[in-house]
Image 1 (tube, rainbow, N blue to C red):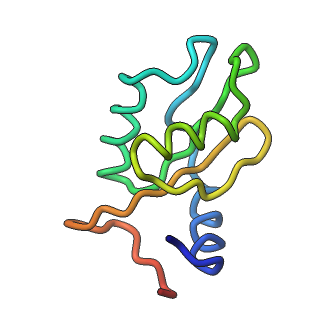
Image 2: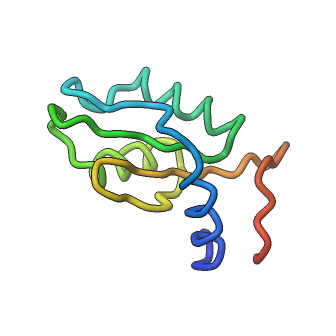
Image 3: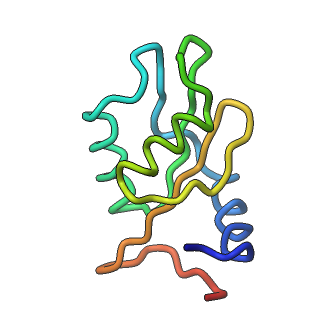
Length: 98
């Protein structure tokens, strides 16, 4: 569980990155979830865009993905969502407050 200070720090980092994945009309599938999990293992932070033709809202997609891979939803703004999952073996992001 991340604190509000850590969440704010992650939001600042997320503002600088582009969406790495898109959720379209096919919705959230297992292959996409596996790819996002692999991406998070390396980068720890990912931005996802939910397209207008998707049957999901950004919040619904983010919560479903986060639940499946044990990640945390950092924020959802409009059609974009940011997820965080700490890599316990080789952390990339050093969060200041714990």
